[in-house]
Length: 289
Image (cartoon, rainbow, N blue to C red; front, side):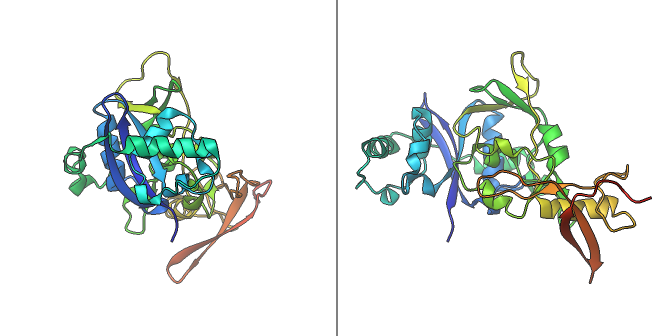
């Protein structure tokens, strides 16, 4: 069936959380998704810890990667009691499971879905707003949301603008982004950030505060980007996909099992039966004149 994820925003001081079923990762990680606009709405109100939590965290020995109390508390907001096998021979793993179970009933759950939908005027925009800065108070880092959107967005088959949102990818517990980017990534993608903000204290603000390091962030899946670039910029006379109006070629890479990228490649395109088809080819060193 595949791993099911839950989007959760949680305040460990007030024991308040907001949790939504986000289905399989690649089904609800987009700028138009309900789980996404709910998390964005909350972060525009106050700081919350955010986790795109997968069900697999309590299977096998996966909890070994979640030793921080803040992370275990996040897992306790969404994981179901019936999915936790307490027959664990590993003492540390058992302790973590016990901690999760003990904290599950202490949370006060809130629902902001309708408020968030109205806040972003979703019926007309079908998207969250990409303005201001996403702050990571835990790491003292920040991302310019408009810059992220400009690098990551694409036009879908209905020529509507959308993007994979940065929150799910930054805060997932594992194996989610790997599926979303299974076919490959645009060269600009910052895959080193997959899951690196999981459980951190985040907030969205209008102005960048002092003391925060502004970092580049882009999550662009190859299939959507190929279609988008073709309709915007086309291909050169040899059929290689362009990424801008300056004649630069689109570059992409495949991620391996460990989310490490392979060599950069170009895309050779053809237009068949009203559809764009692209195939990755070794990166060419020089354009033909």
